[in-house]
Amino acid sequence: MQEKSGKQVLGIVGSYRKDGIIDSAVTSVLRGAAEKGAEVEKIYLLDYRIEFCRNCRSCMQEPGLERGKCVIEDDLEILLKKVDSSEYLVIGAPVNCGNLNALTRRFMERCVGYGYWPWGKPAPKGRIKSKPRKSILVSSSAAPFLIGRYFTGAVGALKQLSELLGAKPSGVFWEGLVNKKGQELSERSLKKARKMGGKLVS
Image (cartoon, rainbow, N blue to C red):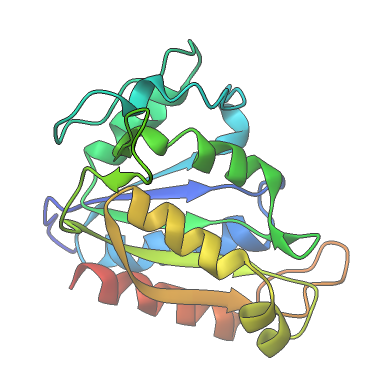
């Protein structure tokens, strides 16, 4: 049995479907990390109450490296505490209507407290100057790999979310041609995802 390394890996599933393509891929990435001794946890954004961002920018007004706190009382703080205590992230969300799905985008908008943008300044600045974490980005589309991977906005949005959370992407797992009801990942894809998870924490 692999000895635990103490490395913390958090998997974030932004899909509307549990046990679907995204969930299976994130699970396999986490399994690969666990095989290398990492401590892993998986959460579903669907299980948390995440309200819409009001764009009040209250969380972005105070200077400093510490993440700004949102004034909305929901489950965001629970989620972000899990993020803050993790060394590695696995972020998965599907393409819906040509871009990242709305559930993950809602979460993404609420993460702006990692930035500093006082009123009157022309642009925000990230509070996390370096990227202390690494991440694997996971997505899928009904379109073929090349079209989905390079001609939708999903990967760019996932990279933006990852970097906002202080994680430098180290790999992208993409599954194309997801257009059958009840479709499952092939053994080849599961093996690829598991290998990426092992490499993430090595």
